[in-house]
Image (cartoon, rainbow, N blue to C red; front, side, top):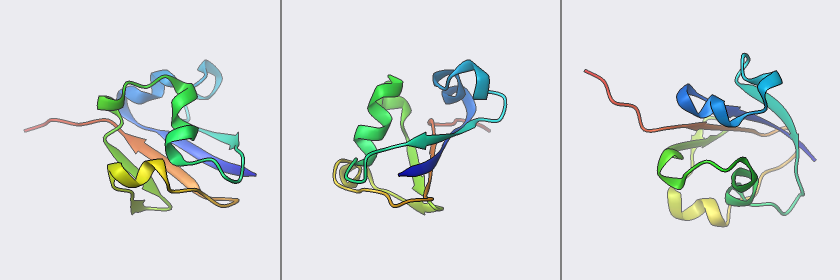
Length: 84
């Protein structure tokens, strides 16, 4: 099945170079793949996977190991961001 995978801020460096400018890509994933399994091949350090949203809904860290997606979902991830 196909989902949209979005990475923001410094995480865009983990996307393939051809899609970094747009910060998103269409991704083919297994129907039973969890969020953690989808993220793993991109090699992002776990401490940088801070805010995870599926279709705008926050997914708590402990639920990322069991939550699966459906066709057309949007998985978006942000790193921790500091500011003032």
